[in-house]
Length: 144
Image 1 (cartoon, rainbow, N blue to C red):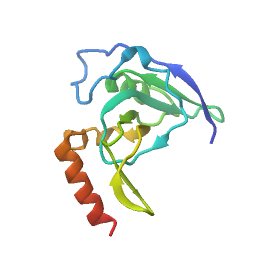
Image 2: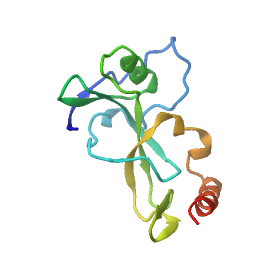
Image 3: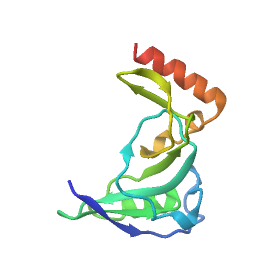
């Protein structure tokens, strides 16, 4: 699957119709400026939402439409043929996420940007020192 084109959606949230569930992008001026080539998921915790993405597959030439708010992304997704559900592009700062690989479970040693399912943007996955401790315990239990 070829994913390379980006179209910028509205940077303004449409107020009134949907209750705010997820945060706005941390810097609206940078929405649409991030690489489309990112990792997907993982890390247990997030620091910032950078943008919301809707991948569209109109028949061979896939592209992403980007938004500053979940509500705008969701509305676009629901009204566009061939559109996926919105994803969140999140930043995970160095030392604020959990890495699990063949070396074991440890705190992430670099900043990274990755696409996440929007449902993962709940408060228990937002970085805090106690959330990191909990995520490390959970990861160590799951990956023994």
